[in-house]
Structure formats: structure tokens, C-alpha cells
Length: 377
Image 1 (cartoon, rainbow, N blue to C red):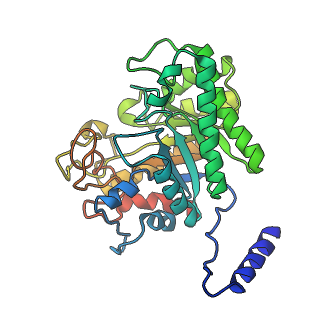
Image 2 (cartoon, one colour):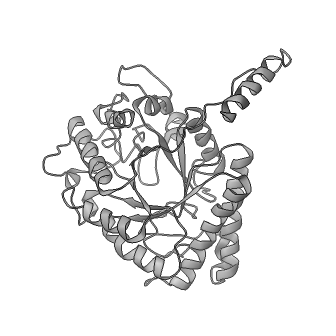
Image 3 (cartoon, rainbow, N blue to C red):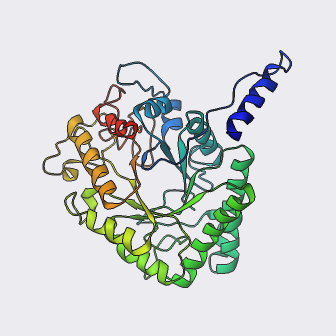
């Protein structure tokens, strides 16, 4: 009730202000956390639009892509953040801030994904930011850099009234974080736990300072790796987190849709945390729209789920059902808007994902977009 009174007072004060001042109403606020997150990683959208991409809804009407996802039923936007990506103008702080503004303007929740790198962080590389390299061998100093950076980013977002609802400490952190070019194995858990806990502490501290609940996610690629990783992490003192985040791509997992519920239930029951598949995708065609080779080719297909729009939708419906029945609380589609344009990536010209977006090659929302409709039921 107090929230509605506050909004009424605010609107009244705006109407009484000078005619030269803005009388725009405040952006809609996200509602209370949903029982299940239907998410989309929209990190590429700003870049794609700057490259000339337009997006059309299911009725072939050009719209703001954030509205297309919101209207379909999406309630969470995931966004990656790189430290100082000198090779691109995107996924830096200013770009991410713009994306969070767009997400919150539609009333969607936000999951902010700290990569703690100047480029992609994943199971094949966890490259320390160039600005931190001098402290690589100093665990304590490196921990302070990580803490200060995390806190500063979140504090700046809080000042702009853009705090995310969930913060991901690292991306696909199967290996130890903040490494050099060649990954070091096995994981040095004294170092790794110390650094992860520094990131977690920054989130807890900003949450306390701002008097707003901001949840913490730790993210591992593939459920089978989540089993050993979370066992080792918790044994080494990494316990203060809210979400187990997993990437699940059947192409690279030993688990199928028929038995992936086993690791899901294991993780949920063992650690008492919420679980989200923070990345997944499936091709709606095997046709390539440009010269950039597509990552999800015929080897990504599952029996019974052809590379068609209906096959893509059926895959998402099935996976969401498996997650929810296992006790999980969310599913995020990775880069459903990385459509083909004339721009280049680090590896080629165009998109390496144009056959796995939720838009057809004419940039119209495809059947897979209907996956989000379930959130309305």
C-alpha cells in the first residue's frame, strides 16, 4: 500500500511542476519475484541495432525487442559485463547500464553476469583483466580489486536506481577465475574460494547498504560439472550464495532431456539452493544466414526435436518442464536476438547463432518465442 501512496504523491508533484520540466511517469517497477524465471540473455541487442538490425513481433510489426520479449511473457533479462573490453564498444559498463534501463523500463527483472575479464570467460579461458595483471600472484590484493570493482559497479547502478535482482559472480567458472592464458589445473581452492567470496561479499554489502535484496548466483557449464564443482566449492567455504546457475547445451553434455533431472535434483537437494539453467539454446533451422559458421549445427540435434521452429519450441517446453518438476526456478535462453547483420565478430562476419535465435531470418519472432507464454498461465 505504501508503494501506491508514494507513486500517487510523486505523480501529483510532477503534475504541479513547471511546464518546462518533464512530466514523464516513472518507469514500471518489476513485480515481486516470480515463482519461475523465464529469461532471455539480451546482451547483443544494442550492438545488433547499431549494426542495422530491426526486430518484428509475431504479427510482423517492428517493435522494441525488449517489448517483444516482455509481451511474449519473459520476466528476466540476463546481461554480461566485461571489465575493459578495448576490442569492442559493447558489454562494458555504459552499454550494460543502457540495457538494464531498457529491461527495467518494461518491468522485467535483471540478472547481471560479471565475467571478471576483458573478454569472454568460459570453461576454455578465465583471462584476468589486463588492469589487474600486476596483482596476479597477490591473492589479497587481487581480492580487493575484485571486491572494489564489483561494489563500485553495483553502487553506480544503485545510484541510477538500476540495481539488478540477481548478480552472477563469474561466468562458467568451471576453472579457477582470474587466470592467465593457460589454465591452471587442478583448482587452487585457497585462492579460488577467497576470490569468489570477495565477489559475494560485495553483493551482500551493497544489498545491505541499499536495503534491497540482491541475490547471488554461481554459474557452471553443464550439469555434470556442477556436481563436482559445487561439492568442492562448498567444502572450501563457498557457501553464501542463493542460486546454482548452469549452462545446459545437450550437444556438450553427457545428460539428455530424459535424465538431466537427476543432476538437477541432486544439486537442489544437496545444497538447498535455487537452481536455474542460465544458458540454453536450440536451432530452428540448419540454414546459415551469412558467412559466419553457426555453432549449433546438426550435431546439436536431439531425436524427436528437429531443427524447425516447432522443434525449437518443443525443446524449450520440455526442458522448462523438466527443470520445474525437478524443483528448479528458472530457464534463460542464451542470445535469442543475435541475428545476422553486416557486422563482424572476433571470428567472422555475421552471426554464429542466427539459426538458434528466437527470430527467423526475416527478423520476425518465430514459434520458439511462444515458450515465454507459459509465464502468463
